[in-house]
Image (cartoon, rainbow, N blue to C red; front, top):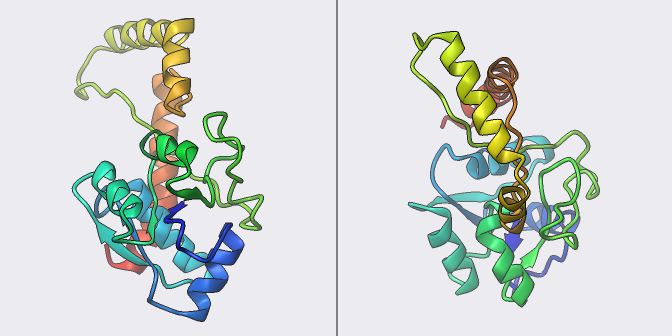
Amino acid sequence: VVAHPSVPANNLRELIALSKAKPGTLSYGTAGTGSTPHLVGEMLNQRVGTDFQHVPYKGGGQAMGDVVGGQIPLVMTAIATSQQFLKSGRVKGLGVSSQARSPAVPEVPTFIESGLEGMVVNSWVGILAPAKTPRAVVDRLQREIAAVLKEPDVRERYAVLGIDPVGNTPDEYGAQIRADLALWEPIVKRAKI
């Protein structure tokens, strides 16, 4: 969660209090309807009773630009999209939804540190193959991709973007997809997304 400097909140607790004091007056931009940042905003609304208004953009960069320019007060976006603006002081970071603070923006506290126990959400990108791809092919692709993701120069480049490459197995990735579907389904239904 990133805010324009004019927002009178310096952490998530203050932002939640501000939203509750002025329901419906704080909007947040995201990369689009149904994106992970959008769902995080809806999860926040549902779990703590805030009334943040979603503003979908065609990408996180556009939403970030409007927060930097002061057109909207908040953006929920990936660290890679916001970190240069955080480091330059053009916006302020109020929280990251990961389990631990991000090495890319260590000054930004986690949702958990802000009192939102259990609110951990990680975005991920994965590689899928057609359902009938032979398991031997899938396993080889996974091994090769995982090996590349372990290379120091690759890890360093991702770290600069605030990304932690995983390279897990097909079974672990399938379990992640199923777990995320179970997490998001009730939130999506309740928010009528």
